[in-house]
Amino acid sequence: MAVTQLLIHAPTVDALKRAQNNARNLLKLESDAQVEIVVNGPAAALAVTLNDEDILSRLVICRNSLQAQSLTAQPDVKQVDAAVQYIAHQQMKGWPYMRA
Image 1 (tube, rainbow, N blue to C red):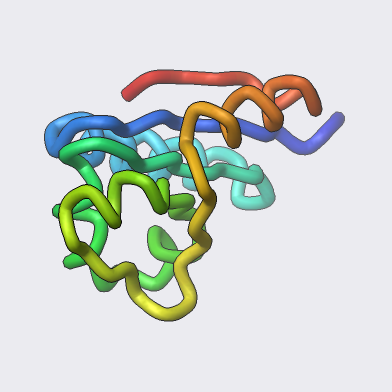
Image 2 (cartoon, rainbow, N blue to C red):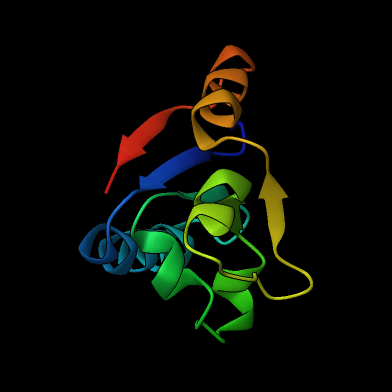
């Protein structure tokens, strides 16, 4: 069976909370799943305060959102220029999209 890949889009604070739960629930069932939580908009303010290493390793934060809110992401968190572009490119590679 192929490894599950999933993009979870979290543009709001509540969505980021749901996305973390969604990722954890999937990983309990499929520990080898590839899960990325793509964060932009107001969710970026919460994302920069997270300290769960497993979640941090799965975060992809929009640099536009960080700059607009004068935020700095944790050193090892993946950043992309624009969440919308990253999501589109990942979908073109076959990654399914879910909005939290």
